[in-house]
Amino acid sequence: MRKTFSLLILLCSLALAGNAQNLRAGVSRVDITPPLGVDLWGYFDRSGPANGKLDPLFARVLVLEAGRQSVAVIALDLGRTFGPPRIEWLRDKARRQHGVAEVMLIASHTHSGPVIDDSYDDAVPEWEQRALEKIADSIGEAVAKLKTARIGAGLGQTTLGHNRRIVQSDGSVKMLWRNSTGQQTGMIDPTVGVIRVDDVNGNPMAILVNYACHPVIFGPDNLRYSADYPGAMAKLVESSFDEKPICFFLQGAPGDINPMLDKTPLVENADAIKIEIGEQLGREVTRVAKTIKTEISANAEIAFLSEELRFRNRWDLDSMRQMLNLAFPPALAKRYQRYITPEIVAPVTTLVINKQIALVGLAGEPFVGLQLSLKARSPLPLTFLTGYTNGYYGYFPTISAAVSGGYGANTLVTRVEVGAGERMVDRGLIHIYRILGKLKDKPEQP
Image 1 (spheres, one colour):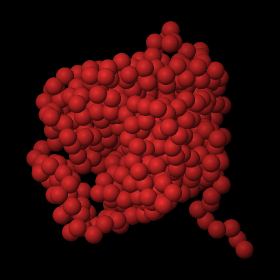
Image 2 (image 1 turned 60 degrees about the vertical axis):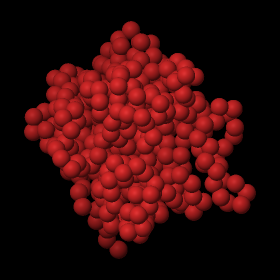
Image 3 (image 1 turned 180 degrees about the vertical axis):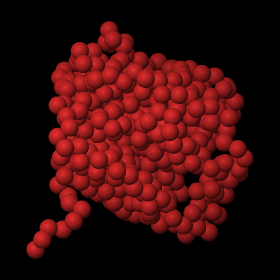
Image 4 (image 1 turned 90 degrees about the vertical axis):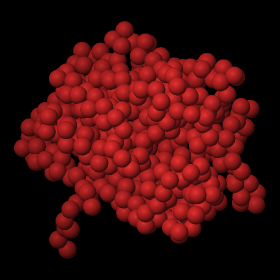
């Protein structure tokens, strides 16, 4: 089991020593768009690989440092994060070459990005290795720009999506992929979380946005690379400030949340709708960001905990293999066969800044109920859940969703045992309490 607790221990010793330290931050951005001809993520009924680029796919890097501790938060315009060996490669590169202790990769889950797998029959695709090298260099660029920083956070609201699972009176589930009439469905989280990082003079360097909604304005008829609505959101936010900060999209828990205008056909002007939806979110982000009063902490702290949890595969493996061959085209079924394992090992990643702002990352597609549970139970009001973080292990439905069923709740794309999502949220909460010093490693004397 991989655990990273050294930062917390070191932070405690620094606090006891009374060493005041500032938060420092550096940002960078790099284009990681693959060449044309790469298969696209997210839909199995496309007519071919990527044949164009509507907008670039970026990796955005924010390096935070406090004393001897540092972490790189990396937002990716990709359908998922890289496989465990590649993440470990990047983590090692960040440590050895740039002195950055940890990395937290968060994918937007755009369905107009390239296919990524945990493992490959042949070598890692050339575009993927090149992207990793660019990201490693970008971490170094952010480190070179480190400067004393101020930080703050705020909350807003907007509604882009709907819960695509409608639980009917008999307990069965009807899937509502597109909801152009705005029909009331199940639970959503309209909260827009915004973290603003400024330089010492109050000029914005980075604006981080946490929101839960699938980036699927484009459907399978789109064969162009695109960041979908998060890309349009970031462009508007960045242009709304004279300082042109870098805007990061940190996807939340959209496992059961689709945009109301899901999979808009290209002939129905999907390009314009992508911009319209992105700018709706961008306007609220800008409004909130401009109200945030950033502060310099007299004793800045960064704490990062990563813990791997082990889950059983929910299904009988032989039945799963047979169903894959029936449900998907041969090439896709072959790819998915790699994921039929008796055990799934998935990380929970927690970052707490100044004991005020918390990010809890799950390595897959969590249902929105898990996000709402985390925020309701966290001792920090500014707690944000991020999906697609440091790995990808399919859907994490809530227990109640697993019971009622529907896509992502009791289908082949859901591999982990029932209750895995709740266990991951619990571990994230435990991480937060440990960082805050409210859970002890040793029992008190009776």
